[in-house]
Length: 147
Image (cartoon, rainbow, N blue to C red; front, side):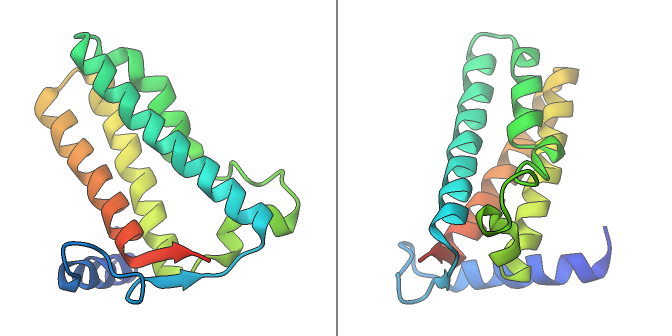
């Protein structure tokens, strides 16, 4: 990973560490976008939550490989570009600040690592990747909010 990509992620994570335990709405950065783009982004976030649930359910059932495809499609690099067929005003990526976008890309990389770890049935690797995915979710949602 290039240093230029690490810099915005490190800045966001540093910012997150400075926040109180509960994110203050006056501290989080407002991200403005048209309603169609906000709706697409919210739908994407719900699918990410569902992917995390799929991981938990597959692990509880002792079948981690069952979550691989869904996780890659909705949480991993396979999720990138999913809004490309939407009208321009409905594509959320064009409205994201660069640091928010960098956190999102990092989240997708962690999602693909999680998918690979699930496929390999490597529990320590699964746990580490799940922590990394969750950390990027927390960093972004604690730093930014849609308006």
